[in-house]
Structures are given as C-alpha cells and as structure tokens.
Length: 267
Image (cartoon, rainbow, N blue to C red):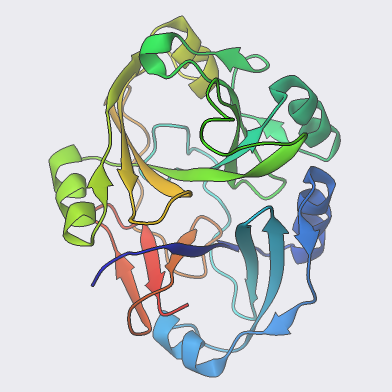
C-alpha cells in the first residue's frame, strides 16, 4: 500500500466547541459538522456514533472527530520526546506575531521561551512548540527558504509536516519507505536552541523528513538519543492523543507504524 498524498489530519476531541473556536482564532476556516459514516467507524473499531468538524488552512485539511464513547485525555506526563508525541507544524511568515495570536486564543507553551531560531545545522527555522487547549501539540514554523518552497502570504499559511517521535529509527524508516515515502536529508538537532524549543534538558535528536510523492505536507521522524520521553501504551483510536494521518489512496483501512502512530487510508 502506497502513501501517495496526505488528504487530512484528524484530531480526536472531547471538547469540539473549544477546539473549533481555538483553530478559528488561528485562521482556520471552519466547515459545518457532519456525522461520521458508520462504515468508517467500523474500520476504526469505534462503538457508537461520532461527529466531524472540517477545518481548512490554505491547502491543508484538519478534521476534529468527537465520539459518543470518549477515550483517554491527552497524557499529563507526555513531553516532546514521548512516543505518543505528534505535532502539526504550521508555517507562518512571522513566528512572534503568530505565537501572540495563538497564546491569546488559549495555547499553552511547550517551548521554554518564545520563538527560537535554530542554527543552520538544524535547518535555520524560527519555531515554537505549544499545545492547543486539549493538549494536541503544534509548532509554529517560520522557514528561511519559505518562498522557494512555495509559502507566500501573511499570517499562518498552512501545514508543512506532521512530526512524530520514534523509538527505533531504522524500523520507522523501513516502515515509511515500504509505504512509498522517501528519506530526505537528516539533521542532528541539539544545543541550547533545541532545548528551548523542546522544553527539555540537553536534547539530542535525529530529525528525518519522509517525503510522499506529493508534498507538502510530509512526515517527519524525531528520534531522541536523549532524553528518554515517557513511554505510553499505544493510544486507542478514541483517545485524544490518537492523531491520524489520512492518505488519499488505498482501500479503507487503519494502520499503525512501529510506535503505534495511526494512519488511515481510503479518505
């Protein structure tokens, strides 16, 4: 099965009105909620019914799923190196202004300070990590080569990638290449700037972009040599931490990567 193009990112919510208001404040366009189809709920293994709120930011789609039978809230002890960690990187032309906007909407910081500019060896982007009101991790990302990558405009423009923490980098690379993604140029991120961005002490992490045939957005693998993040059992599909990447092609199915991160095929 080939992961050809990301159709959407699905976030699980137990507070849809709160999250809809938050993402609208960031600049997402909110569509009308609709019931989740029963056949899809069967693929997901979800009992009862559910509703979905569609959101759009530029060309990117995020959907908020709320189920009649709720799962677990986002783990309190999870940090940027935890295996359940998966963030959406939102591209912006001005990280400071975008962070002020997010903070006023109810964002909670992960990063120790405001936006931090990483060294050129780590990509040279200016970024800050934070959480939405329900705990989902996000990143604001101002890229030094944004125009060359097609990012033009003002404000929060779209989604560049979804970054996931992996425990075994070769196993994860093998999983994603087997599904049609290509390894990009890896970096080793460390130092005081990375520590401020992650809100961690002395982090050292491999960052490996995995590019689908059509991008953006893409998937990014985060492999921390140190510190060791809190380990968690694989999330249930109705848990708040159960972010799903939805791919256009393939029969309807639900897959997990080697660390339990969820992928859905068939739209």
